[in-house]
Image: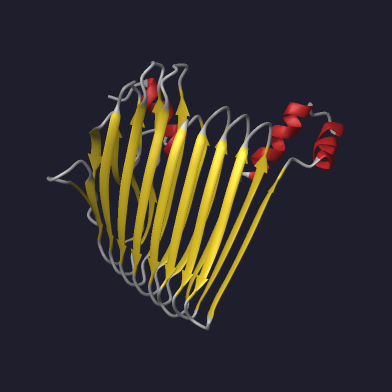
Length: 306
């Protein structure tokens, strides 16, 4: 049975208000606690290490897979290896995410290594949301790694979101795109106090007419630190674009390094990066409508991170 706290954490990281329909695997404090499969989507526990294999049959349409992780105790160190096989011409949505509630003095940590093999013509939308809470002094640590091998004419949408409350995160994303494959990454991240976040995204545009767009938006508050490294590598006729924007506040630090590397004369790669503070004109306009300065600030930040 799921507790009220469990349900709250699942709502935060996966927008779940009840046990989902279809395929799902719920992991809590290092153990799988609930699982379901369908005729088209199988979830198989690994035998050699912690984790699961998610197999989506070819031509599967309109189905979703929920694989949230929650940690509700202090002192938990959890590592999981998940492998995804997305069949040819399938169209599937995968909702992941991890929430840590730590009210103790000892650190709780979850490291998730996800590797995807996406076969020809498939479309995958993958959402990974991170959230932390709890009144304890123990740190909340999340270190996700995502590896994607995309075959011809694949379409991939990635949403990588950190809502709040994570003390330390190191996110690594490595993607290889074959002929005609298309990738859109949307990253949104919020840090506060003395939290630290690092994001490394490398995309290899190996196939002819492959394309990638990376959009990163972040807000750094308090004394937090954010470090970003983006690398687009064009090895064929391809198109790639990086756009990373950050709002910096208080005594925070943001370091953003977009990099583009072309190894083909028909590779078209562009990068943009901007770091700045809240615009006073926007604050004044909202305050003139009756909002307090704090309400106006929150409204702007929420809009920026959408």
